[in-house]
Image 1 (tube, helix red, strand yellow):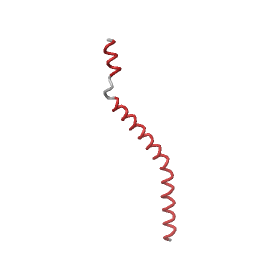
Image 2 (cartoon, helix red, strand yellow):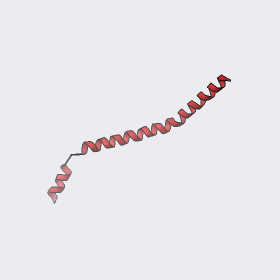
Image 3 (spheres, helix red, strand yellow):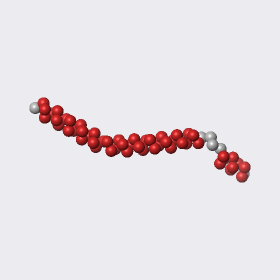
Image 4 (cartoon, helix red, strand yellow):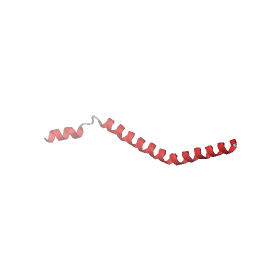
Length: 58
């Protein structure tokens, strides 16, 4: 039983895949944070742009 447990602890197969999964998770969290932050400012930008275009056309 101890041999099996030691072999399991030493086994590094799949470690690389786990590292990539963690990295992908971090990237997703970062992109979500940027998207939430930019959502308001981009909405304001297009609202102001629309207002200026409609004001200029009248």
